[in-house]
Structures are given as structure tokens and as C-alpha cells.
Image (cartoon, rainbow, N blue to C red; front, side, top):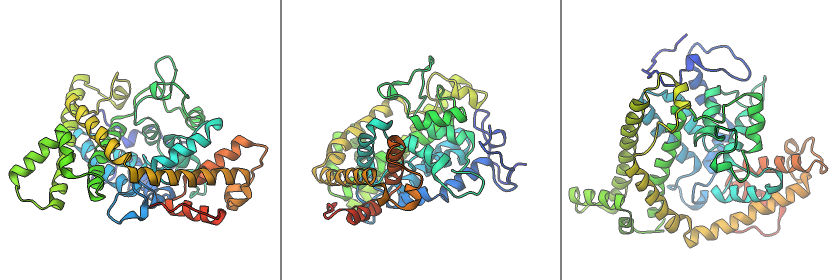
Length: 402
């Protein structure tokens, strides 16, 4: 039974009515497609709500106008839907993947992930994509019949593989995982439900992944300018941004700064989206896929920047890395956040009784790998504010993240 308001999909789109199903079979909904149900389950999850108080670049309390993981996720969802709509993909699946792509992130942004990865070095490491899979398959406990959200195969596949295959044709880890191997959490789940780790994900996951890049570029420029980490004229070092600023100044020569910034960021999004649509149309025409399976089996992604826009994207990221992510004030906060996460991990692992009952239940110090993973799960789920409160509860001195 198809729901009202069905939109056109190309033959290569993932079809919610032909899904490979869920690990635990469920009756079809009379009002929503399978991918709409997945999107809704993600939005109603505890992990999604916590994104409101998790750092993007700035700590949550530094200002109401800076992005958090939640506002970033919403922006990614909007861009992913726009790309999917233009290219004939399933909008609901693209949005579900965009909304779930950061569920596994820790408090304090990439700092928290780096620290947990170091703390977990002897126990399989920590990877936010693998953590997102743990959340939607194990850690969310809302339903009477199963742990996790019981998402459709296509959603889980896209969550795990939106950045590309994890294994090469011979079954060895791809470049990203060559040194340390595919995360154990992904391999364990894949043994239960094969996500075909050696192929690309469907087009919807590819759209969500590139929407993430577009959102990062645009909103980090906006937030960096608002925070005074760099000035708008410094962006002229990036040829792509210089061209956009010239266009704005020619059309609006006396535009106030706040509107000039917004005009720049909206044009960044527009140029990138239009480029991805053109390049996607070109690649799809060349591949001529008759199904989503053909996209998965392609030699390269079908949703991508053109060569010129890949360089523009790389140039923006190089600028932001030097002027924003490694700015002295940001690095100062990162070092303090590093201390908080490292302290919490050490205390909880040494004294699991200091964790809430639901997290320490069934643990023994003798099973060190299981204990360490439980501690990592607990910390990864924390918001910035809760991590700070837990540190204050357990330690005499807690760093001020300013």
C-alpha cells in the first residue's frame, strides 16, 4: 500500500516499497513509507534530542546563534532533501540519513571523539559512525519488542557506508580503515545483517554525505565570522569565496556586514548544490543505472562535486582548519574538554560504581573490554553540559571551557 503524496522517483532511487526489510519484521504502516517511519524514529530518539547540547565547533553555552550538532543536522537534512529531489532520489531516506549521520558524536565535538578513541585504543578504538550504528541497533531502548530503532536495511547501509565502501574487492579494509581495520561494532552487526560493506551506499546516502560537506563549509564560515576568529576580507584568500564576494559587492556596494555575511553563505550553499546536481546528472547519464543496485556497484560515487568544486571545497576547509579549528581560543577550549573526557573515562573505568545503575548493571572489572566499551557508550551519549556536571560531581576542580 503506497501512501498519499507519493513523489516521483527515478528507477535508480531506493524504493521504500521494495525495501530489504528490517532485522525484526514489522507490519507495513498504512500512512507512512518505510523510510518515512525511519526518519520519524530517528527524530523521536533520545540520541537525536541530545544533539541540541552537543558541540559543533563552539561549546554549547558560548552563544545562542552558533551551530550545535542539532542545528547542523537540520541544515544537512534540508540540503540532502534538495539534492534528492533534484536527482530523483527518495527524499525521505536522504533526510533520515542526514538526521542520523551525527548521532554517534561525543560531547565537545571532535575533541571528545579523539579522546575516547585514544582511551579505547586497546579495546577496538572509538569511531562515531560505528557508534551511530550501536545507537540505532542497540543503545536506544524505546520499543517493547527489540533494542535499537529497528531501521530498514537501506537506512542502516547508508548510515555505515555514506562515506564509501569499507572493504575493497578482495575483502580488505579500504584506505580509511587500512591501519586499524573496520570498527568492531560494524563487523559484529554485519555478521547479523549483511550491509554489503564492499559496495557503495545508495544515492540517498551519497546525497546526505555531500550535504554534510556543504553545510560544514557554509555554517563554519558564518560562525567563524560571528565569533571574530577571522574577518570577512580574509576570506578572499580562497578564490571561490573571493569571486562570490566580488559579485555581492558589485550588486550591493554598501551592504551592512550581517547581510553581507548571510549573502555569502547562502551563495556558497547555492553554488555547491547546483554543482552537485549538474555533476550528479552527468554521472548518472554516463552510468545509466536502472536500479539502486547499479549505483551500489558503480566504480565511483554518482553524487559528487565537479573537479573545480572539489578544489573549492578543499580550499575552504584548509582556510577553516588554519583560522578556525586551530585558532588559539578554540584550541584552549579543546585542551580543557580533552581533560574532562579523559578524567571521566579513567574514573568510570576504575570505579564503575560511580556510573548510574543502568550503565553499570552486569559489569565486572574482570571483563575489561566490555567495561571499557560500556564506559565509552556512557560518555559518548553525554551532552556537553552533562559531561561538565559529571566531572564536577567526581572531581574537585573542573576546567572552565572559555
